[in-house]
Image 1 (spheres, rainbow, N blue to C red):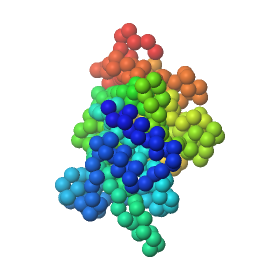
Image 2: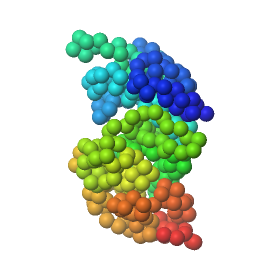
Image 3: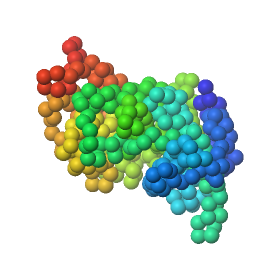
Image 4: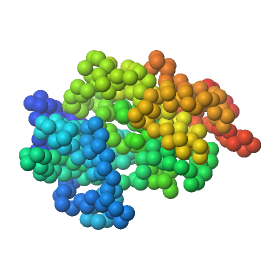
Length: 348
């Protein structure tokens, strides 16, 4: 496994706090991620220009191609967000490393990094070395999939399968000690024609739990380990659990963020999709999202309550991904009411 090699490699790098092209290339080599020339990437496809999205830590372009063939997602760690070179390379390195760790932990449920690269960018006539990552374009985000008007019907069986995919992936990650840290419907992607293709993306805020035989990854995460609640978790009830800013991602903070996604899937119908309730701006607050969806007649109360328990203030009382996965696996669909109910012998 490359993880131990990468960790040992980074123990020397973080001591001197060196983050540069040489370090990124060394990491990519240990992670078996090849380098690609920026000139090989075309920022458009048959339908038009790639879609640009500027996040808090990187700029993303969806709908790119490599030599005009493979559909790709391009993610750049540029000067606009990271003026200092070492920060650009540190952020890119962290995402490359943690995504590869996550992919090895749950290969069926994580979209791996396919390529990395470094190109010379010019901002205000100043030249800079800018790293980027390339991954597969899976079609659309779960957020877009759930928000757009319905042109087809999702049966309760379809909804149950989507929930099983989400919980199956998270249970596998948590079992390997990997906590995502930024779960939202925009960070889950799938092909609209194949809901079973659903995978997690964007592991730039994730954390691997230290344990015997599981060395530290060597990254400093000042954003959420300062001992105080910073801007990333400023609003209690947001997609970041109340305790997030005091210790960063855990299995419990991931479950807090997953709850509204499960609810959105289970109650999805034409009227809900047309309302287009998203996970950002005024609708980022988990409890606000859940308030808009009172107990749903097509989901048994016991299952519904376990999902609601994911947003309890006490993280120790939230269900684990594994226990909720077990509940969904044992669930059945009442053919008369088309209601998702607990299976026989399943405890709440």
